[in-house]
Image (cartoon, rainbow, N blue to C red; front, top):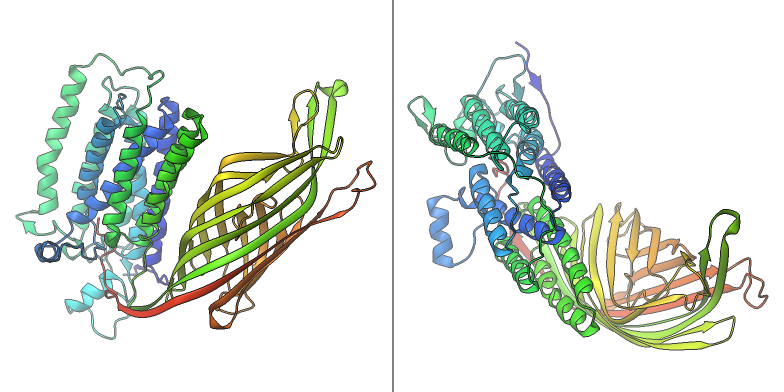
Length: 620
């Protein structure tokens, strides 16, 4: 009888892809649920962050063997853990929600927000499990049975158990049990949505969802191969260990659901305004979450860190926003915001190195000095009224600045996987003069800033960010704001400015990237935005040339690694301000220029052994 066969190169990447997709979908739904229920965004994000960290840790804790626990206690260090147990994740993840709720004194009952999220996220993840071959089913002769190629768990175990010979390219046909569970999860989503308005007690919708998932798992376990289990696959009579646990838990949760419904009158109405927790509670939970990620970094795979750092970044953003909204004095803003630098420096040590048989790691440091100057024009407009009665007043300004900076950068480069992590800090200082061209009045400001940052680059994509803290300024790109009178300035001075870096495409060939306030020694004040295209001319040395726009002009920049560790980073930006009545500046080309010089030293290359190919990446 014919069966379905497929070959995906390499299938394990699909598990990581769908793991990330399931997390992002769940996060977006939970953010929407929080918005719909009028939850304050900051404590809600912090609770979700803390719960997610414990979910990932819990999925690994319960997958460790007794020998692995013994090794950890003897060496006081975590052992590599790629195996996962879903129940462990749910247990510690739920505990994280309750702890976070208590920590931040979060009053609303939020469990129903997870009623749809949980089965939907599991359904998405099962697609990755199907492609990866983990959680595979028992051998089957059904028409929809599937066969797996080499370097997948079904093929490995069937070969190990001498169920197939050395010449067999595919595994035995097996039940696509992951797709059975996917269908069950989608059915659970439909039932939860159908019954959500019938429940009287808060949390009943979530309990109903959990009961449905237990039923789905109880049924699908009959088709799952015992070899596919991390733990819980041993048969005891007609059921395996996992099924016996479900048989015990299922009636308890059904009775709990019935009891809550019997003693409740109705579902509570949507909550009103909720008091925000204290800054001490916010920062302490944020720092504790950071400590957990840093402490257990040895357990996390790339996909898990991507998921954790995504929500961690959101938590950091809203924490900074909270500080700036509630503390007007600059010294307090700088003090509390600077405290967040420590978590990001710790996070830089958690970025993973993917598993192969061995990898070559290059570690180095670099120190740099730089100089930047600019002489350009911009404008600002205030307008009032509408239609034919609109009144606009535009003022033109000349901006001129000079600054110098220095920086320290740490680079960890995975030469085997062609991945790179850079983190460090820049400092810069200078003078910034604005001249109002209508009355020739000059305004002189001192620029002074520190810039911690973190960046990660793989071959196909890169991302990163940081903060500019101090007395920093930036030019406005000819804004047109509503208001009356004459604009007084074409620049803004601030104590805080974000830094963003994004890249798509192979660095050695052609890539597109975006930078916000991301350039050494400083992209402030003149060319905050850079959107461009670049090439490395086919070289893996890191050399590149970039051309693009700052949205008010064009720029060209380069990264030139020379001999003996010297690196040169020039940038030239030019623009024109046209359609003016002032002949002195109309169509005049404006220039900005910077030059960075770095010296790389302390280079050290290591070859590190890694774990083997047959890891249970997704045994849920």
